[in-house]
Image (cartoon, rainbow, N blue to C red; front, side, top):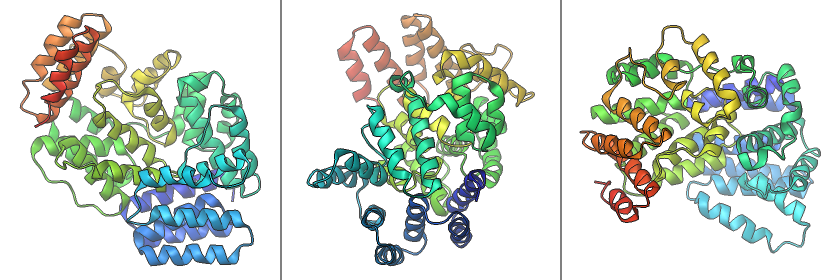
Length: 441
């Protein structure tokens, strides 16, 4: 199996898992295994799939068969940890804490310990190039699929974090790889490196029908168009997010979907409405990020959820860029997080791919398109952003208080974040704390 074929098969698998088509997903996994051979990446996906579709005993049986059938202790150990973290009762946060605590007792080289951390939790100490080389060196002992996926994941990480970009050598050959391998992740990293918009042609354009309906405040149209989009692209979490906002504002119930997509819709509904006063949606998000990190949607979900968990109205640039680079979809809101050298090219690309839509005009500018009618809350928040950029903090604060009078609880929470941010900018600490403390119903 060629790498491009593996990437396409993995996309198909992700779509099937999102809609709950577990039998078809199992067939795709078997196809990948038969053509690409055994890989740790696919092993992790298979254990997670068995847990989701057939339950604990099925994934435990498969995990035990791996331990019994392979001579290498590494694969037995990794299958054991993968099985453990997929258990329904496993707490993803505690799991990530316990792994380094356990490995600290091992009499092994630190490089091996970092590799185990990466393989089991997705985390490692990426401060030095030596650790990066270690991960790739260990993966050379396994499948080319594992080596490729590790390389791309590291490239995404180092291309999205401003603290690491300058020291990264990953981007040096990404453009060449992007020309040979059909993988939107490579295409996006190449775009960040070169600002050449043609790289984005390998990606899925934004859902402009849903975006325009959302910007104009036509919430029923948001739901209608999102259903059509998600039927074709179940992994488009930006569209799922807009649909969740529309349902909450209209007082509609969450759709009871199946598969990972159904769980994601419930998570989005919970964090948008803050209907659940526990951290269960955050735990579910962490579980998806831990067990399905070899797919595209977990980083995007993490970036969306972080916006609601944060007390700041400003996005976490590293998380947003990691989400941007991590899957095939293009979120137009990433425009403000892109390196300055890429923004103009990104805006032109959006306009070329969205004839007649207002979305590209809105997202590629800090101003409000004067000839367009936007939803009042969106128009006010754009005014806040513009005034803040221009240093007009009083004007931005007045607009934030105007938004705080909205009938929508969601709009009022956004307003509270802006009020706190602007008060802090003016060194008004007590008022900032008060605005956050009184924001939640």
